[in-house]
Image 1 (tube, rainbow, N blue to C red):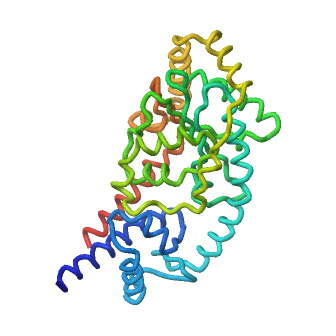
Image 2: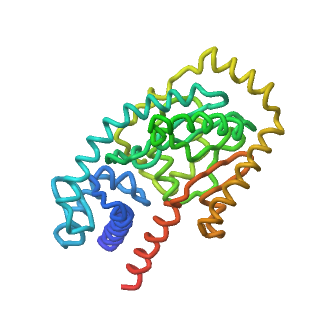
Image 3: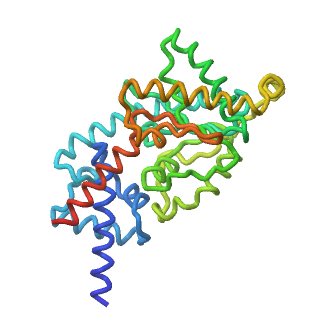
Length: 311
């Protein structure tokens, strides 16, 4: 019985270390309930608390005011996090308003806040990142209309509030990349508009529980934010857009965009092998992630894990 208990303790400890290695990449200490939500194994919360206390005594991690990290500089990280959380709460109100505005555009069916703001982190330079679900076979028409509007925001220096860098349509809402990074990104997303489609999105991505079986803990779990009506004006715009842009136009706009992106990023020597992930371009998906955070994070995490296994 004690051997089973020890094996369970070791499993929890390894899972905790894996979580903290992930977040140390972002210099972001976690509270116990956040560690619990990020664990890759199912365990009682009470056992996690015991494990965290044991790890603290064994100096396997650092703790300061209820926050945990693998970085010895945890005090400074906690102060930084609290400031960032406070600013994120202020910016989130504005981002929700922008998300509701985006929802008014033709063929938009869901808008969610993603990126660092959805994790409760913001600094003065933080953008408003949005994940958008569109009507089936209208993604590229929708995206083009939104980005034509975005060009006007440069005139007022507001372009950072309209970073619409991930679109999928309702043809298939299951994300293709099913890994720890995308599981956290999807789970942390804050719904801004389109509550029914948000529910469909999450139901189509139940694989997330394979990576986060205890349920991700988000600071704001109020899905009522997403209850927004498109209105008569949006319906009229969609009728006009359907007449003006027949189905073939959707594919044409995709091809034009893809050709433009490939030319642009080839000039900047963006790795060809990474292009199809960072700039995924299909009739039903549009990603524009030049920083390719997914690869960077998973690569660093893999190095952490390999180093740990070799010790």
